[in-house]
Length: 210
Length: 132
Image (cartoon, rainbow over all chains, first blue to last red; front, side):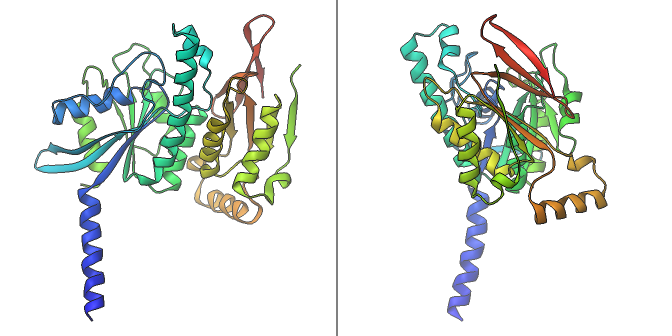
């Protein structure tokens, strides 16, 4: 009997523990605005940035974690650890970084770190409780990287919130994004300027099951 | 000259996930475009990206990947059921997959029912388009 009680207590404790330490990952291709969104969330609720952003792809090359973020929407509260991941790509060419103005040595170092970053991001997929996929709403949504990320989350049964970022830009096409992923909640935002960020938080509460 | 190597599903059917990935990547690393009958599982696609990253060096810059597959969201219940049964019994034979080395294939665009393959024209330094 005590063994059963211990098991029940353990089960409840695990559920409680899991909810308390909800891990929300930010995934997507490079330069979609993942770190800009992570910074927006951290600035809104912690008053500090999470990481550095840049126009050159693969600025984030290591997994970054901000613990104990508490966000509120109405009378609801959501507590989680935010995990910002390096952009997922199928190719990394150091010569692209040279074209962006880096020395050969710097470019090769960045490329090497970027490949490791992609590997780590994929390895971390199974650790996530909820994933925010950040896509550049000005770009073609039908890329295989986008489809592979979303397909993998679906296969792993991880709740997904799709974000169409950069709606402040003229070339934004949210309709095309919605047509590419009709079965998902898609929120158009500008992480840089905070446009529609309230809608984003509302959708995050829904997807996280609060 | 561009070489396209067709890989029938039967050639990867009996292999483990890592065996499939190694086989396809080996062909891509020989500067050939792989045309695979069917597709990999979603988890294998992610594993393919991960393995590709492990292989990148000064020579091999990675791959371009494109998969054409019946959109399950667009299928009615019966067609979906039939497709899932076929997948279960015969494997993921529906559709096809294109894997091109990044040194040859600049971009693969999906429309989503057709694939456009843009190759790097090294002589002219421009990209050329091939439609599938």
